[in-house]
Length: 361
Picture (cartoon, rainbow, N blue to C red):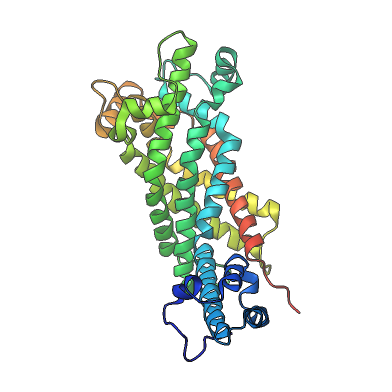
């Protein structure tokens, strides 16, 4: 029902609190939004109250409540990409976390101390048990949720904003694809840098503790020890990894997905997973050197004489050679692809549930 031409009061909130002889029906309206637009409910209630002015008041309050509900629904619709990104990112990270932890241990060690993926993995299992591979998982998930919410949610928002430039299969011009991806990667650095700092510090602390050395093993202890500034040590290297990664990843996924679609409206489960997984491989390989630099710089956090990004790069080249920038490349490729494949699969699934495609009549 629309508001009456001459409402008793122009302040809608007043109707919810100050309307005489209407407290019961207004409280019911506020608690049961599905009933608040049914005029007969208010008419019946007002007749019982014996107040002829009650119906106009209730109709205006009902309209107010309905509009508030519509505004809230619109906000949720705009934010759903960020929510889905958070859920998808956490799901993918939890699945591949042991492999990520093993890769970080490999990268943090010098070339002489570094071992292969499986020797590092089984050495951790032998000395620390399976729990050692999950050190820092909780704090990582806390960081991954907003990180992937921003990365995936921002990309979806940017693609919607530029939807007029999309072709029939949802692909943007190459330059615009890369720009949307780059901006998405830039936004997540705020969360990914401290998240990975805590993760690598906890993994290294677990190694020290297993060897009998004193170490800070709690996330809060690491935060107190490093401070806010210390948590962002290596953030430039993190940005050098995240920005090109997101640019290449989202562009590749859009192109692969569009090629696979053909005449269909959407991809089935396995093809979506395959497209999202395949898109991560070139992005992960391209950003491998930045990933190594980021890990090395985070591993030296809190130490006296920590190297700058340039000094770290020169030191690695001089002492270990260019091949050191690709330490852990196999586990990164093997795990990054399914991690983001799972993440985007979850996002696409949630989006399909929330926004089902109407079937033709």
